[in-house]
Length: 588
Image (cartoon, rainbow, N blue to C red):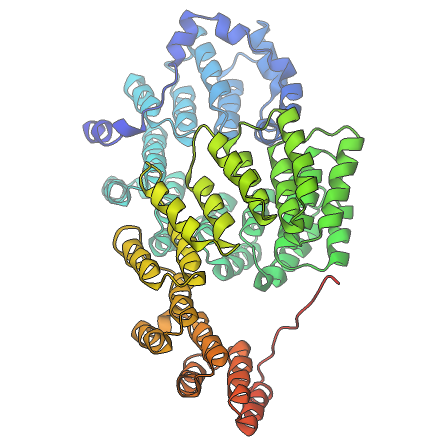
């Protein structure tokens, strides 16, 4: 088994120093001021969240040689476990060096804890080496190695190898260990196989909170939010308490108006369990409420619950107002943030660039650009992409092109941003030229790239070129999505080729959804094509009888062709079938 693992996981090797090298050069351990790590963590909010479970006082005692009170396997085991839980690899390596120095290496529980730490941090090669060097092994040691291997399978998304490990675990009786089972179910859902993950979950007799959280995370990561909500209800009924990690995972998966009811339910559970003072949960709630279509009044109430004002909370509020399209509020918080001396970072600037793009204000955009240069973020490729997009939305092609050409390197988003600059303003030929230029580089276009360029072709009547790009995408870059099919229908329709558009739609069938049919219906209404409009009206009602927008569009097509009674009946069908149309809203 060890030979197989070494061969399979050569690609997972990480370029870090072995703990033994730290022992040879003990200054690397002494140079770290663990007693001040709390201050360092305060500067880095992400690390602060990860390090909070580690006893920094104990680490400081190790550093200064006060070993008497803590030099026990129990204390070291707790420290290593904390590093594993928080994925703090660097600190774990330093503790490993201390373990070697103090002669704890042969201790089976210490070695097992270190093996678990390397595995959870994803350093599979180091976990394997440590296992080979461990003189005494027990069942827990083997379980930790298997869990580490499964972490590697998850990272590489190598389902076939993970299944082989599953088979070996079954053969040798390791599935009785809940840690191995949890690693297995996590491996399956990370490889997008949620059904097998659920089978593992159902076979675990003694489920703990970690197992429940992992399964819930699997459903959220695979866009099965409704099932995830059912799972957390079952978890609470079974007597297990969900923690902030479980709730954060669930909340982060909510992204549209249909998820608002789930968001409110989870929010209620958070308050009931007394977790509403957790700053990370509060920030996530602010973000999620803004994404799920919260009213401005409710969003203000959520913002008022934030326990403190710092960079993280201000960024969340700015991003929230940005998501809701409330430009003035977002800029107001940004201005207040600067006045009270809170530093801006990458996330702040990204949100503000999005806000400026919505405003299409060139003057404010230039001011933000100046701030970016002054704050030292101008070389960040994500910020540069945001600037291209911002200038594009304000219609300033020269600045967008200048920003693009000044970049040292480009990624797919860079090219997409420049393509959008031309496509959104009817410059289809220029968009085609940019796309051809992109094809001559090492950067590969994605599905978004093709959506932009096909749409651009449609706006200037380049039907053949648009269809050529559609076939290129379908052959070499992945399966088209609903929006690509709708874009091709629009491509035909804008050129007046409604017969070709109808043939194209009829070949697709129901699986593409109502959007494609709606696109053709709209084209029939614009071009006054009664025959195709009536045929599509009957077909779309049969295929999608529960979509209120379908009846509204059918009614409009019938009315535009003089069928007023049929148009009224289409409207009445919405009421008779109990279908409710979502009310529109405006900020004005």
